[in-house]
Image (cartoon, rainbow, N blue to C red; front, side, top):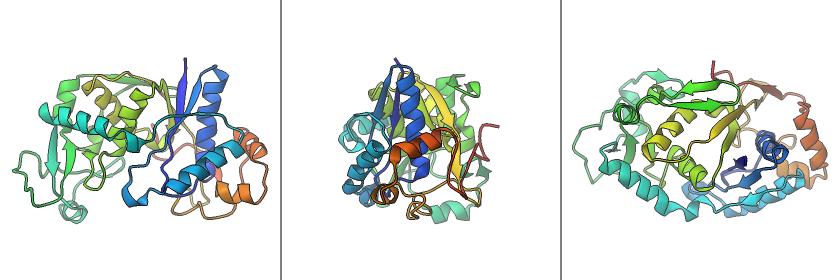
Length: 285
Protein backbone atom coordinates (compact mmCIF):
# COMPACT_ATOMS: atom_id res chain seq x y z
CA UNK A 1 0.00 0.00 0.00
CA UNK A 2 1.26 3.48 -0.85
CA UNK A 3 1.56 5.75 2.18
CA UNK A 4 2.41 9.42 1.63
CA UNK A 5 2.56 12.37 4.00
CA UNK A 6 2.42 16.13 4.24
CA UNK A 7 4.56 17.43 7.11
CA UNK A 8 4.38 21.21 7.62
CA UNK A 9 6.08 23.14 10.41
CA UNK A 10 3.83 25.51 12.41
CA UNK A 11 6.23 28.46 12.18
CA UNK A 12 4.25 30.40 9.58
CA UNK A 13 1.02 30.16 7.57
CA UNK A 14 0.68 27.85 4.59
CA UNK A 15 0.91 29.28 1.06
CA UNK A 16 0.17 28.00 -2.43
CA UNK A 17 3.41 26.04 -2.55
CA UNK A 18 2.31 24.06 0.50
CA UNK A 19 -1.09 23.51 -1.09
CA UNK A 20 0.52 22.09 -4.21
CA UNK A 21 2.78 19.78 -2.18
CA UNK A 22 -0.13 18.50 -0.09
CA UNK A 23 -2.26 17.92 -3.19
CA UNK A 24 0.50 15.93 -4.91
CA UNK A 25 0.96 13.67 -1.86
CA UNK A 26 -2.79 13.33 -1.33
CA UNK A 27 -3.55 12.42 -4.94
CA UNK A 28 -0.73 9.90 -5.28
CA UNK A 29 -2.08 8.04 -2.25
CA UNK A 30 -5.76 8.39 -3.18
CA UNK A 31 -5.27 7.23 -6.77
CA UNK A 32 -3.47 4.11 -5.55
CA UNK A 33 -5.97 3.33 -2.80
CA UNK A 34 -3.36 4.20 -0.19
CA UNK A 35 -3.10 6.46 2.86
CA UNK A 36 -2.30 10.16 3.08
CA UNK A 37 -0.88 11.30 6.43
CA UNK A 38 -0.59 14.69 8.11
CA UNK A 39 2.35 15.12 10.48
CA UNK A 40 3.05 18.39 12.31
CA UNK A 41 6.79 19.06 12.56
CA UNK A 42 6.76 21.17 15.71
CA UNK A 43 10.22 21.00 17.29
CA UNK A 44 11.51 24.33 15.99
CA UNK A 45 11.74 25.89 19.44
CA UNK A 46 9.96 29.17 20.07
CA UNK A 47 9.12 29.53 16.38
CA UNK A 48 6.55 26.71 16.60
CA UNK A 49 3.05 28.09 17.17
CA UNK A 50 0.42 25.48 18.09
CA UNK A 51 -2.45 27.63 16.83
CA UNK A 52 -1.05 27.43 13.30
CA UNK A 53 -1.49 23.65 13.25
CA UNK A 54 -5.25 24.17 13.63
CA UNK A 55 -5.14 26.57 10.69
CA UNK A 56 -3.29 23.94 8.66
CA UNK A 57 -6.11 21.46 9.25
CA UNK A 58 -8.71 24.02 8.23
CA UNK A 59 -6.71 24.85 5.09
CA UNK A 60 -6.40 21.20 4.05
CA UNK A 61 -10.10 20.60 4.63
CA UNK A 62 -10.89 23.73 2.61
CA UNK A 63 -8.83 22.32 -0.27
CA UNK A 64 -10.99 19.18 -0.18
CA UNK A 65 -8.26 16.85 1.08
CA UNK A 66 -8.77 13.93 3.44
CA UNK A 67 -6.02 12.65 5.71
CA UNK A 68 -5.03 10.63 8.74
CA UNK A 69 -3.12 12.57 11.38
CA UNK A 70 -0.11 10.92 13.03
CA UNK A 71 1.68 12.05 16.20
CA UNK A 72 3.52 15.36 16.00
CA UNK A 73 7.28 15.51 16.23
CA UNK A 74 7.15 16.92 19.76
CA UNK A 75 5.89 13.53 20.95
CA UNK A 76 8.83 11.65 19.41
CA UNK A 77 11.84 13.17 21.15
CA UNK A 78 12.88 9.87 22.73
CA UNK A 79 13.33 8.28 19.31
CA UNK A 80 15.59 11.12 18.15
CA UNK A 81 17.69 10.88 21.30
CA UNK A 82 18.03 7.11 20.96
CA UNK A 83 19.13 7.33 17.32
CA UNK A 84 21.69 10.04 18.08
CA UNK A 85 23.03 8.04 21.02
CA UNK A 86 23.40 4.97 18.82
CA UNK A 87 25.30 6.87 16.13
CA UNK A 88 27.52 8.49 18.77
CA UNK A 89 28.34 5.12 20.33
CA UNK A 90 29.28 3.83 16.89
CA UNK A 91 31.71 6.71 16.40
CA UNK A 92 29.69 8.36 13.63
CA UNK A 93 28.69 11.57 15.44
CA UNK A 94 30.83 14.26 17.02
CA UNK A 95 30.06 17.40 18.95
CA UNK A 96 30.56 20.74 17.22
CA UNK A 97 30.72 24.08 19.06
CA UNK A 98 31.42 26.24 15.98
CA UNK A 99 29.19 29.23 15.46
CA UNK A 100 27.95 30.31 12.05
CA UNK A 101 30.34 33.27 12.12
CA UNK A 102 33.29 31.03 12.96
CA UNK A 103 32.46 28.72 10.07
CA UNK A 104 32.12 31.61 7.64
CA UNK A 105 35.45 33.03 8.79
CA UNK A 106 37.13 29.80 7.65
CA UNK A 107 35.93 30.52 4.10
CA UNK A 108 34.63 26.98 3.53
CA UNK A 109 33.80 25.72 0.07
CA UNK A 110 30.33 26.10 -1.37
CA UNK A 111 28.27 22.96 -1.90
CA UNK A 112 24.95 22.25 -3.54
CA UNK A 113 23.05 23.80 -0.62
CA UNK A 114 25.44 26.46 0.66
CA UNK A 115 28.55 26.50 2.83
CA UNK A 116 30.06 23.09 3.61
CA UNK A 117 31.33 22.66 7.16
CA UNK A 118 35.09 21.95 7.01
CA UNK A 119 35.14 19.49 9.92
CA UNK A 120 36.90 21.79 12.39
CA UNK A 121 35.63 19.99 15.51
CA UNK A 122 36.07 16.47 14.15
CA UNK A 123 38.57 14.69 16.40
CA UNK A 124 38.96 17.72 18.70
CA UNK A 125 38.40 17.71 22.44
CA UNK A 126 34.85 18.83 23.25
CA UNK A 127 34.47 22.05 25.28
CA UNK A 128 31.42 21.45 27.54
CA UNK A 129 31.20 25.14 28.41
CA UNK A 130 30.02 26.01 24.89
CA UNK A 131 26.69 25.05 23.29
CA UNK A 132 27.17 22.21 20.85
CA UNK A 133 25.47 20.56 17.93
CA UNK A 134 26.08 16.99 16.84
CA UNK A 135 27.40 16.38 13.34
CA UNK A 136 27.56 13.22 11.26
CA UNK A 137 31.10 12.24 10.26
CA UNK A 138 30.16 11.79 6.62
CA UNK A 139 33.28 9.96 5.48
CA UNK A 140 32.95 7.47 8.34
CA UNK A 141 29.23 7.13 7.64
CA UNK A 142 29.80 6.41 3.97
CA UNK A 143 32.50 3.87 4.78
CA UNK A 144 30.04 2.12 7.10
CA UNK A 145 27.08 2.31 4.72
CA UNK A 146 28.85 1.19 1.55
CA UNK A 147 27.38 1.82 -1.88
CA UNK A 148 23.63 2.27 -1.67
CA UNK A 149 20.95 3.63 -3.96
CA UNK A 150 17.58 5.32 -3.69
CA UNK A 151 14.74 5.39 -6.18
CA UNK A 152 13.15 8.59 -7.43
CA UNK A 153 9.98 8.61 -9.52
CA UNK A 154 11.57 10.79 -12.21
CA UNK A 155 15.33 10.35 -11.81
CA UNK A 156 15.18 6.56 -11.37
CA UNK A 157 17.94 4.82 -9.41
CA UNK A 158 20.28 7.32 -7.74
CA UNK A 159 23.53 6.39 -6.02
CA UNK A 160 23.48 7.92 -2.55
CA UNK A 161 26.46 10.23 -2.08
CA UNK A 162 25.86 13.04 0.43
CA UNK A 163 29.52 14.08 0.66
CA UNK A 164 28.55 17.28 -1.13
CA UNK A 165 26.92 18.37 2.15
CA UNK A 166 29.92 17.68 4.37
CA UNK A 167 29.36 16.74 8.01
CA UNK A 168 25.70 17.68 8.41
CA UNK A 169 24.10 18.54 11.74
CA UNK A 170 21.82 15.81 13.11
CA UNK A 171 21.16 17.36 16.53
CA UNK A 172 20.93 21.14 16.60
CA UNK A 173 22.08 23.41 19.39
CA UNK A 174 18.54 24.77 19.74
CA UNK A 175 16.44 21.69 18.92
CA UNK A 176 16.43 17.97 19.74
CA UNK A 177 17.02 16.96 16.11
CA UNK A 178 17.67 18.43 12.70
CA UNK A 179 15.26 18.04 9.82
CA UNK A 180 17.43 15.26 8.40
CA UNK A 181 17.29 13.03 11.47
CA UNK A 182 13.71 13.78 12.54
CA UNK A 183 12.10 13.39 9.12
CA UNK A 184 13.96 10.16 8.39
CA UNK A 185 12.95 8.57 11.70
CA UNK A 186 9.37 9.84 11.48
CA UNK A 187 8.83 8.54 7.96
CA UNK A 188 9.99 5.11 9.09
CA UNK A 189 7.79 5.18 12.20
CA UNK A 190 4.75 6.24 10.17
CA UNK A 191 5.25 3.59 7.48
CA UNK A 192 5.68 6.15 4.71
CA UNK A 193 6.41 4.22 1.51
CA UNK A 194 6.52 7.15 -0.93
CA UNK A 195 8.22 10.32 0.29
CA UNK A 196 6.74 13.22 -1.66
CA UNK A 197 8.34 16.64 -1.41
CA UNK A 198 9.66 19.48 -3.54
CA UNK A 199 12.61 19.28 -5.86
CA UNK A 200 14.49 21.65 -3.53
CA UNK A 201 14.94 18.68 -1.17
CA UNK A 202 16.26 16.31 -3.83
CA UNK A 203 19.82 16.50 -2.50
CA UNK A 204 18.66 15.95 1.09
CA UNK A 205 17.39 12.53 0.07
CA UNK A 206 21.01 11.40 -0.30
CA UNK A 207 21.51 12.11 3.40
CA UNK A 208 18.27 10.44 4.43
CA UNK A 209 19.07 7.29 2.48
CA UNK A 210 22.42 6.98 4.28
CA UNK A 211 20.74 7.47 7.66
CA UNK A 212 18.27 4.71 6.78
CA UNK A 213 21.18 2.41 6.08
CA UNK A 214 23.03 3.30 9.29
CA UNK A 215 19.92 2.92 11.47
CA UNK A 216 18.49 -0.17 9.71
CA UNK A 217 15.31 1.64 8.70
CA UNK A 218 12.92 0.65 5.90
CA UNK A 219 13.65 2.28 2.55
CA UNK A 220 10.79 4.13 0.80
CA UNK A 221 10.65 5.47 -2.74
CA UNK A 222 10.80 9.20 -3.43
CA UNK A 223 8.77 11.55 -5.59
CA UNK A 224 10.25 15.05 -5.92
CA UNK A 225 7.66 17.31 -7.47
CA UNK A 226 7.90 20.67 -9.19
CA UNK A 227 7.93 23.89 -7.18
CA UNK A 228 5.88 27.04 -7.37
CA UNK A 229 8.28 29.92 -7.99
CA UNK A 230 7.62 33.64 -7.59
CA UNK A 231 8.23 36.21 -10.30
CA UNK A 232 11.88 36.46 -9.22
CA UNK A 233 12.35 32.74 -9.85
CA UNK A 234 12.55 31.86 -6.15
CA UNK A 235 10.51 29.18 -4.45
CA UNK A 236 7.63 30.40 -2.35
CA UNK A 237 8.60 30.87 1.29
CA UNK A 238 6.62 31.55 4.46
CA UNK A 239 8.86 34.46 5.42
CA UNK A 240 8.53 36.15 2.04
CA UNK A 241 5.27 35.16 0.36
CA UNK A 242 2.69 33.76 2.71
CA UNK A 243 1.42 37.09 3.98
CA UNK A 244 0.19 38.14 0.55
CA UNK A 245 -3.51 37.56 -0.05
CA UNK A 246 -2.92 35.84 -3.36
CA UNK A 247 -0.63 33.28 -1.74
CA UNK A 248 -1.66 32.70 1.88
CA UNK A 249 -4.17 29.84 2.17
CA UNK A 250 -5.83 31.14 5.32
CA UNK A 251 -6.35 34.56 3.77
CA UNK A 252 -7.87 33.02 0.65
CA UNK A 253 -10.08 30.74 2.73
CA UNK A 254 -11.31 33.55 4.98
CA UNK A 255 -11.95 35.72 1.93
CA UNK A 256 -14.41 33.10 0.69
CA UNK A 257 -12.50 31.62 -2.25
CA UNK A 258 -13.53 28.09 -3.28
CA UNK A 259 -10.72 25.86 -1.98
CA UNK A 260 -11.67 22.75 -3.97
CA UNK A 261 -11.74 24.81 -7.16
CA UNK A 262 -8.32 26.22 -6.31
CA UNK A 263 -7.01 22.69 -5.73
CA UNK A 264 -8.31 21.60 -9.12
CA UNK A 265 -6.64 24.57 -10.80
CA UNK A 266 -3.33 23.69 -9.15
CA UNK A 267 -3.71 20.09 -10.34
CA UNK A 268 -4.06 21.38 -13.90
CA UNK A 269 -1.12 23.76 -13.56
CA UNK A 270 -3.35 26.85 -13.58
CA UNK A 271 -1.71 29.17 -11.08
CA UNK A 272 -1.97 32.87 -10.23
CA UNK A 273 -0.26 35.53 -12.30
CA UNK A 274 3.35 36.06 -11.23
CA UNK A 275 3.78 32.46 -10.09
CA UNK A 276 5.32 29.71 -12.19
CA UNK A 277 5.42 25.94 -11.83
CA UNK A 278 8.93 24.77 -12.49
CA UNK A 279 11.64 22.31 -11.71
CA UNK A 280 13.95 23.76 -9.08
CA UNK A 281 16.91 25.47 -10.77
CA UNK A 282 19.32 23.51 -8.56
CA UNK A 283 17.57 20.17 -8.99
CA UNK A 284 18.68 16.68 -9.86
CA UNK A 285 20.38 17.63 -13.09
